[in-house]
Image (cartoon, rainbow, N blue to C red):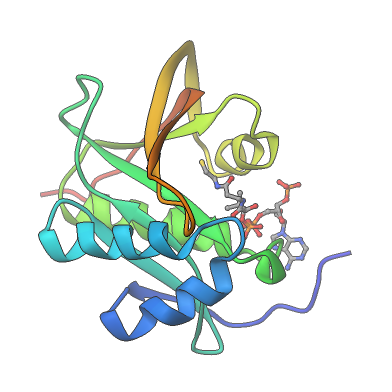
Length: 169
Ligand SMILES: CC(C)(COP(=O)(O)OP(=O)(O)OC[C@H]1O[C@@H](n2cnc3c(N)ncnc32)[C@H](O)[C@@H]1OP(=O)(O)O)[C@@H](O)C(=O)NCCC(=O)NCCS
């Protein structure tokens, strides 16, 4: 049974949201990871987008940077929704927000690398119209543990892609 619908809003993150995001995304995302995503936003390499329920931040997605020869495709990454706020449509709202940004920026498609064993995320992307070609990539990212040295993690991923319908020029 679907839970009661609550108002989900989306907007770019601001510095004032970061400590709330640290709280809401723990323990799956470490404080250092959240702060690194904000640093990337302030440096202009990526943009950190946020979803809120009743005005309270509950999840994020980052956009920016193109890889894997798809220079006409916007890369979305690091989709995370706080544990207490899942299965309420927040993930889908963030995916839709990233798509609207891609369309605004005139990208022809948008893609996200998703771990091949991350069934929840793969299903969510498929339900939003994403497809993957039957080819995997090794996705790498830095982890910043609170009590240890930063380390590189690696995951075999699909590139889930959606062709965007651009408005007539
Ligand atoms: C994957 C992830 C982002 C999904 O976020 P989410 O907010 O739960 O996503 P949604 O609520 O939009 O959709 C999830 C499911 O809830 C369902 N749902 C949506 N609104 C609902 C509601 N009001 N009531 C009940 N179910 C609902 C959706 O239909 C979907 O169902 P399905 O799994 O059977 O397809 C989240 O689980 C997460 O942060 N996981 C850890 C990080 C991760 O793996 N990120 C992806 C990296 S690629």
